[in-house]
Image (tube, rainbow, N blue to C red):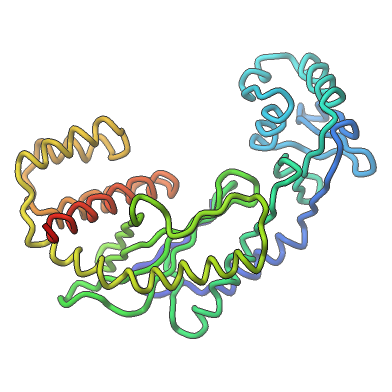
Length: 326
């Protein structure tokens, strides 16, 4: 996993863009009929998909799972219990009987993904380049970049400090994408508390600012949606930063904390060690401090899980705002 996080200086996007250009140059997308494919095990017991006119493509764990799912709707673990010869027999029978089309995403002789034929390609470099004009003009900064084998996460912040205290808080956007079908593209509003690098993802009304499946993608329409989401985030930041600061003065009663802890245990999103700490150890009982405890503990996890925990903090901020308004 490649990871860059910062609390002080914005990240330079140019090395990331250059890397993505190299990845794009190596990527080849192939539309094939299942009858053109043959599954087999090659040297060193590597699973491969032999494609007419292309040759052997080595499957990784993800593309093996996708092939299993698309062939028979079964889990990969079901097939992996079988001997290689049995896997070859069953996969190849299904490939011949299916008579359908797959989109194969490859890099050299590696098969990155096995996708449905209507999968709309949305590469990470395309998404990064939509934000570059905002970064170059000083309207936004890249503050986090995390890449896994299947997903990429970017975090952008607006440069204006929204806090009226010596505790910088910035509005921004948290986005994620997968070039290989592991998730849809989404953008969420984020509050970024610089002192501890807390990123609090806040879903307005429980929904992301923008979410798009990798289907039926119209490039111009998609670009308009991204620009609209950025503008909505720019407007939203003032209201939510104000609620966040006001939360310092909103007491969290014992009854409220008890009910929240019961919710945390039921949803199993908030880490157990944080729940135990909130139950046993004293802390300043305000909604502000509870929100910060959740986001601070989220930082110990990989980004997939971290975002989910931070969304819980965003939901707590929404409740705080309702208490302020009420």
